[in-house]
Length: 183
Image 1: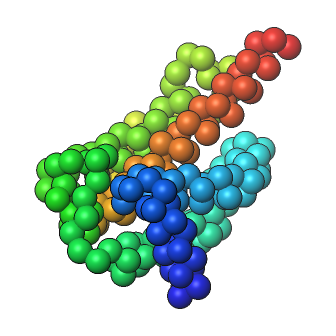
Image 2: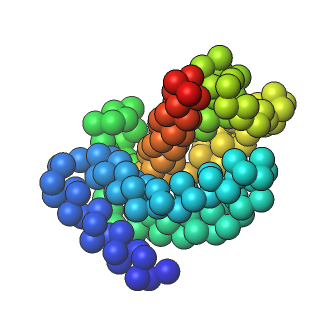
Image 3: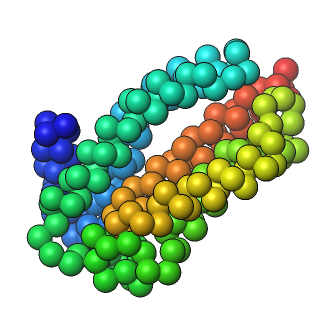
């Protein structure tokens, strides 16, 4: 895990020097990591569409979990003191949890977006598998509860990652739906 932490620490420091804001540096690092993992996610989604099941999600989790763990440890080890961010001015230090729970709440909402795509009329032609509505609520609640006690820096990572994933899936599904309508 140390090489991952060192690599993330170096990249995070570089982004911090470039942006001047620790929260923005975390967003940049997150986007970079997501772009690097994009081919893996794309291959996973292709297999999932064929099988209409998410059995490969465990493998994907095993790949991305070290990323989150590495970032968590990097943030805890890398900050010299209470550092805030212009992204969330209500938080004095990104090493502390969000006192109002806004980051966890936003993360929960963003995590729901890809799960509601099958219910949108534009994507109906794709016949995406629909998650039961009860699962949507429990998924959002679980995301909120996971993010609530974490340092805000990790919450920024989780929120950015969720936004990236939701946007990437919307683009992918939108292109597929457009092709179906034009065919």
